[in-house]
Length: 260
Image 1 (tube, one colour):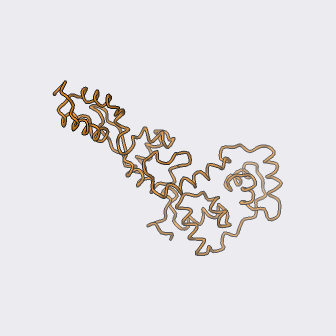
Image 2: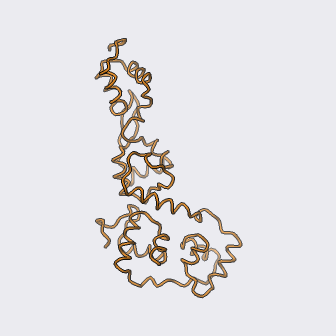
Image 3: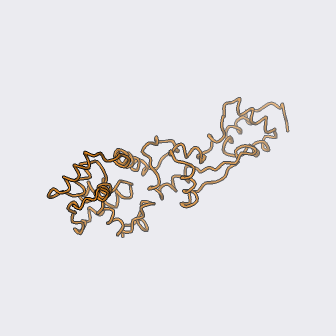
């Protein structure tokens, strides 16, 4: 296979261009060299791990970038059709990969599954413009810590008192305790509190401007609480409105990309 043969500048250029994009088996055949000779030359000129030269990312690397478990990504592949492929990088090394273009096309259709709050820009190649907005929305969501914080005895007592006040609503309680409206509703149930906040009139029709804002923010990935604050509505009412409009909460889109 040409062991010991001098490497030409053309040989080296081909190796550099092909490393990580075609299999070593193909490189070996093209250059007429042994597998060990190709690997040794690649190491000497600093090419490193071939999977890092692929114009995409392995599933293992994707898991680390998004801070997700294998089981989660496996569900994305099986249930949500994430378009991964098997690629042969070395003689007997087949790994699951996804190109950056394929990943971003898939991600745009499944925004609700992804959280870009902690992911540095550029980790998955050039990002589409919509990712910047989604990252901002995810970071805003991440600032709310109520999901994992237990209620204190003092908060429970305060909730018992405040829920009885005239004019008290779910949005006001949510803002006061820095929790979601759903969390407030659940805590009232857990404490067996019979009083309920006054509900906002969710039967008031949305204006065309409000519908436009609702559609835009929902598709961009903003939380119901953030949308509700923007529109002066309740988060529960916002979710109900989106459900009636046929909003797909997983893909963050409306049927045929239109609010109906």
